[in-house]
Amino acid sequence: MRILSGIQPSGTLHIGNYFGMMKPAIELQARGECFYFIADYHSMTSLTDAAERRRNSLNVALDFLACGLDPKRSVFFRQSDLPEVCELTWILGSLTPMGLLERAHSYKDKTAKGISPNFGLFAYPVLMAADILLYNANLVPVGRDQKQHVEMTRDIAIKFNQAYGETFVVPDPEIRAEVATVPGLDGQKMSKSYGNTIDIFGDEKATRKKIMSIVMDSRTPQESKPDADKNLAVQLLKLVAPAEVSADIENRLRAGGYGYGDLKKALFEHYWACFAPYRARRAELAANLDYVDQVLKDGASRARAVASGVLKTARQACGLE
Ligand code: ADP
Ligand code: TRP
Image (cartoon, rainbow, N blue to C red; front, side, top):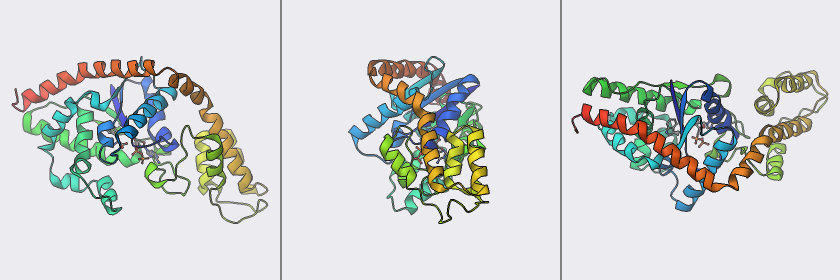
C-alpha cells in the first residue's frame, strides 16, 4: 500500500497540523510505503515572500523529521524538486470541470474572506490531484478540511481513466475522527490563518502566556462543571496528556473544587512535556543542515523513480507520446 501526504510551508506548524496530519502520517510508516512532501508549489498561492518560503520549507523539514518522520522508511521530498507534477497538473486540469473547482470549500472560504483569488488558488485542487496521482497513492492521511480535495482527486482520476483508459489509482482519504478538527485558542478550527494556534515548537514563555489567556466562563473553582468535556482546554489536554491524567482532571472539574487556572497550567505542562523529546531532536537536526539537505535530495530521487514511470504511462495514454 502506498501512503502519501503533503504539508504547505506557508507558516509555522501548529499542534492542529501535528495531531490532524503529521502524527497519523508518522504512525502510518508502519503500514505501508510512505511518500511525504513539502508542498512549496501550493504555498505560492498564498505566500509571495521568497525568503519566507525558503525558511518555512526548512522548518517544515526540521519539524517533520524531529517528530518522527524516518527518511529510511519514508520518501521525504520537496514538491518543486519534481516539476513533473506541473505537467500532470496541466493534463488533469484539461479534464477538470470548472464547476468542480467552483464548489471547492477552501476556495470559497478564502474568497469569502476577501482574498482576491489568483489562477493558482483556483487550480489548487488540480495540483493536489497531480501530487497524489503521480505517485499511485492509495491512502492520503489529512485533517477533515482536506477531505473534499481528496474527493476531487478521485473524481479527476476517474474522469481520466474513463477518457483515456485505466491509468491512475483512485485514492482514499484517511481522516482520524478524534483529531479531524483540532480547535484553536478561540474555539474555531486551529489554523495559521486565524492567529489562534499553539505551535509545535513554540517559545516556552510565549506559549505559556497564550495558554493561560484562553478565555473561560466565570464559574469559580468550587463550582461543579458538568459540561467539562466541552471545555476547550480539556479537549486540548486530551491530545497532549496521558488518558488517565485528562480523565482525572475532567472528573475533578465535574465534581467542583478544581479551577480553570489549574486546568490551564496542566495543559501547558503536558503540552511542553509531550513535545520535549522532539524539541531536543529538532535542535540536533538544526545543527546538521547538510544532513537535512541530503535527506531531501535522496527523497527527490526516490520520488522521481516512481513519478517518471507514472507520468510516461499517462502521457502515452492521452496521446502525447
Ligand atoms: P492551516 O489551516 O493552519 O493553514 P494547513 O492547511 O497547512 O493548515 O494544513 C496542513 C495539514 O494539517 C492538513 O492535512 C490539514 O488537514 C491538517 N490540519 C490543519 N489544521 C488542522 C486542525 N485544526 N485540525 C486537524 N487537522 C488540521
Ligand atoms: N492541500 C494540503 C494542505 O493544505 C497540502 C497538500 C498538497 C496535500 N498536496 C497534497 C495533502 C497531497 C495531501 C496530498 O494541507
